[in-house]
Length: 216
Image (cartoon, rainbow, N blue to C red; front, top):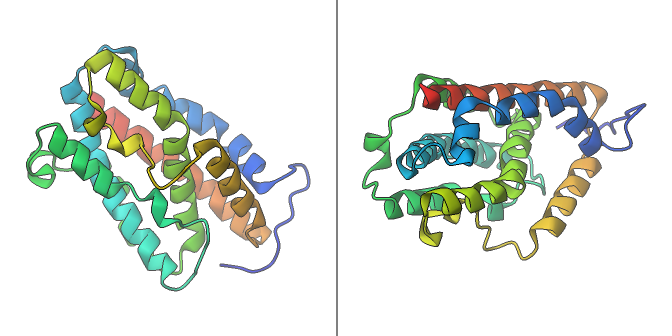
């Protein structure tokens, strides 16, 4: 990762700049028909299981990427407490899935997403950070609402919703604040910031495509 401090003329912090620059993509992604219908109670627990099955593939690829980058670039923000694949696998088992790889093969859109993650190398720390930010900060934020709605609408039991529980994190609000502080402290050059913004947009695009694939 470049060690030249970033400079942003009009934004008070990198976290604020990133949130503002991705707000349109974020809004577009979270209003895709599949996710809005799921959150409105118009689908089923089986549909939620399909959703979780696709994200098992995504988090497997993402966490492998984080491991690759962490071997050469020790970035404090890459906290193992955020890892989600073990929780997803436990949830899927509780939802009656015996072999998620066989029962929930990746959709074409999921395959494109994981292929992109797998194409990134240990030198792609900034791009890795973009996907880390998009997924995990989302899980710590909107993911908490998703868990409540899935439990309310579809009767999901606590053991089926471990994806959204961060047992190693005592206070999610404080953790998110610390995450943004660590993000702001990263020594990124302006070119790195541009790369980060572009890759966050790409991450939202990939996630939106997965939602569209699930809708079909």
